Image 1 (cartoon, helix red, strand yellow):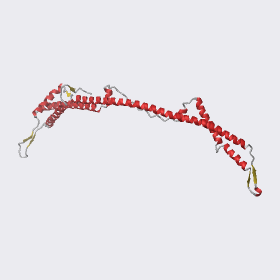
Image 2 (spheres, rainbow, N blue to C red; image 1 turned 45 degrees about the horizontal axis):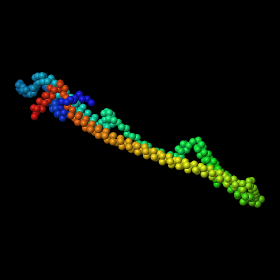
Image 3 (spheres, helix red, strand yellow; image 1 turned 90 degrees about the vertical axis):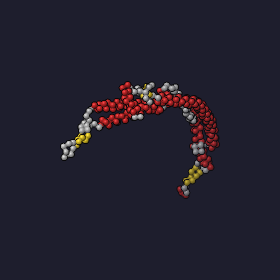
Image 4 (cartoon, helix red, strand yellow; image 1 turned 120 degrees about the horizontal axis):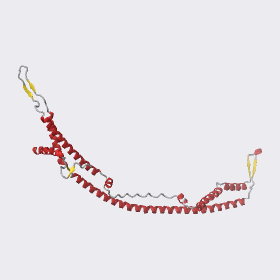
Length: 302
């Protein structure tokens, strides 16, 4: 800010602007006089008369030109100083008014309190997150049970190879001979079991038991896995609530701090505006005589 224009004693903005307007009126009056300069006179006569009459006079002295120009220049200098001072004062008021709270805090070294960061809601865990925490033995056991249950299950599944072969065996036992064609083209097909159906049934049920044992153990691990997932969900939600409670407490503190800062800022704005508004426009010594002339003009016009 440029405070060269201001001091404890001087003119307020209203008075300064008034005197500048008076100076402009004086400039206009002097300019009109100087602009009417005419350096010759005009006479007129009729064609029948030798006598001429004076129609208009010309200036007979040039002394007023320098005086007039000097006066105009001084008045312009006075107006320039006053206008610049008023502009600077308005600029300072505008800077104060438009100064943001954040900038004010930096410029005045007001203690800064950072706004707390709101915690992000937790991501719901998935089974893979839990599996990734298992040690080598537990993870291997889970993968092994999946592999064994899948292998046995596919083989004895109703659409599996062994289940299909078992059904075919039962069909062959019930229909050992089939025919195709008729007459001389008749062909007979004879089917003979190559393994004992009892052994097939025994193995089938044994495989079912093996499959069920693996499936049961796998399901138990899956149940434990789901329970661990649920526990992790509860844990993350509990931790998030604790973080959110801490955040809310910090945010309340920050809001209280912010309100106090806003009050201090508003008080400073009011104080600065009052201070700037009371600044007096000081006239340099070389403008004092000009100012006195303007004052005389004001007194004479009353």
